[in-house]
Image (cartoon, rainbow, N blue to C red):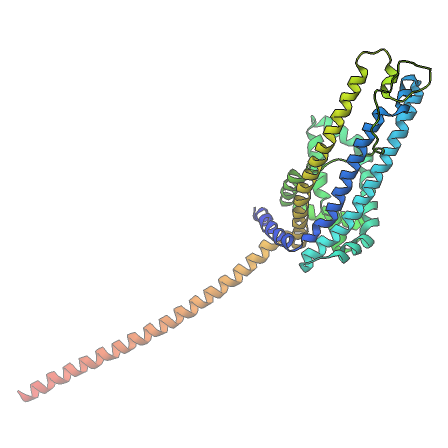
Length: 360
């Protein structure tokens, strides 16, 4: 229970570090801008795709041609997503080193981002690929275990694995170690501090998961004319998506409505992605700093505080003994003085009594 209380201490320290290092947000702002550009790119591409002349040919394609068309488009989308993932790792490599410097030194700058990029990009990329490969290999066992546990394992296993892998990137950066060593260290840290680390990560996930926007790909912006059908079909592919649906009442109107919906939703989605990504970024920076602080202290701050309290208690006890001893000595001296005074009084009274008897 004492370790759980330490989480709030780490939050306080992370908050103060965050306030003094606003430049931690700059790399992520660039990543958010790139994400929004990709969303606009894919949205405009979809808008253009609906009215492009070559789309009309889909209605005349054989099934294998349709499959090849979507495969080629999917390959382009995959290539763009891979490029975005690489850029994300670039930003992460620099940011992790900035977190490290901020926690250990109290300040960070652009040079720390460049240093992290050169030192940790390859390691982080290979580590991510290794973990993804392990996930793919263990997927059948994960599904079987989930069925055996009546789907409870499908929820619990990712949480447990996520907790054990929480610190591998932080360990890699803080200790400048290799991938395997960092993963082992992360498992060891989680074994020592599973409960507080799990609570910290669950709070982290609750605030950051699902708050960001998406990404995608597309083509150049081009306002197509959906009214290109002139009533004559020559067997060739004329411009306009609706030309492939000749004779279908209201088809051009439906396409026009779809374009209007896309034109309206695209800026709305972009704004929502920007707002959600900014909120997620704020929480991500804060909780990342908290994780670095937790790793640095290893949830052992309470033990140090206990030692300090024990030393303080010993000092207080010693002072109390000294005060008690001084009080006892003072009281004894005062008692001795009172006793001596009483004896003198008795002798004086006896002397006076003897004198009176002699006079009589």
